[in-house]
Length: 409
Ligand SMILES: [Zn+2]
Image 1: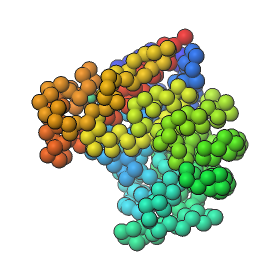
Image 2: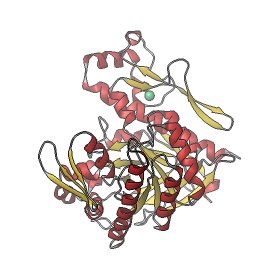
Image 3: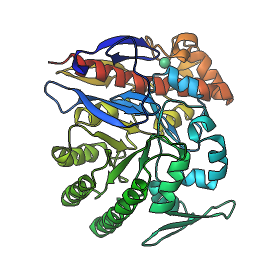
Image 4: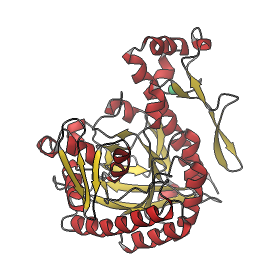
């Protein structure tokens, strides 16, 4: 019984296991509920992939371009990361191209990450790159991009996206969708919803022809709930996605992760409809450690966000304590908004680590003073050390949530 799980030591965190001897990795995907929190929708799930098992809640560091910014796979693993978002389909089609990835044997060997991996379908880029001025024509069948530098024409549709994700070889692949903009009102949300549903059916049909990667590994297909900030559209989309009997459920759209109160409201709308045994993924959540705590409290299992490493690069380092309060957790600090701006002159002679008590490599070996110096001088080592800390804090928050849920009730 997973409920009776014990803990074993694990770099950067503690994960539950049932025995000292782990079963051999199976070429299959399976997810199950381990334990629900005694009074909240928060839960620990376990899912098995051909590249290992994952216990949730679990934050996925983002390696959009087959690279985790300023972090090596070893850094990320040492931080307790069990799964990453590796290689976004659009970016991989642009460069290095599918031939290179296929020759390498897939994204896992190409980027040197051997644990579980999820990849994105490219649907988000249909929205974000068209906003940034990249030539992008959205048609009924899919989207056509012209790469802004190389001029390379990229066709993204349900067929090409799923086929590219099979060459990427991620353990979890995403249905091709149209991410809903928050600026277009109900009409735009409805149009994106209808198109996402048609593309979802086409993605599922394409995947079901052969639900394995180009390297013979089983892949799970997740569908994406759209519908913007409209309750009836979110519920309609949830019902449609569930009809497709997919392996897991994602909640997407521009609003998710950017507007946390609205994100929480949307989760509350759809959660009563969701099955207990499937992984729930909010796409793009993780601007702050507290954001993870908030969505897990509402029953979400996995999330990805570029913010921890982007914040680190810009000198914003997570700072706070994980405090237990009314049976759940808060990430708190006094007066610093849970972050340190390392450029501030007050840190020039501060010999404390970024976060006293933090077990990350950076906090164990370096002072705020040293990081302030590296940052002010623009030295590359800063970006590496700062990114290690921010990702570590996210994984520590996940570990604490797992422990609390497993011990609750
Ligand atoms: Zn640290």
